[in-house]
Length: 92
Image (tube, rainbow, N blue to C red; front, top):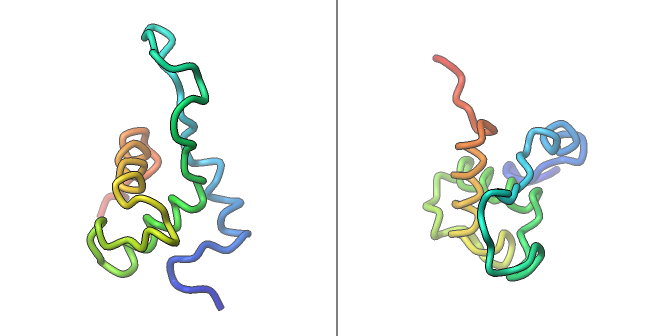
């Protein structure tokens, strides 16, 4: 039995195609080459971090860093994915 915020392989197979991929703006000049800087968090790890916050009701800053990585990074992914339409609320 998985913890309530863990994602099964079957569920992840359905969710993964809905996760937006990061895109570089071709009209913008970047100082670093593509792939430079910190490596991005794994999308499944980020998704499980978001599920953890939603299931437990904890604050973003309370995310266990050892399991999900930086809480501010997970929150930024959530905001980016929400802006891209991946985290839509259904009409009530």
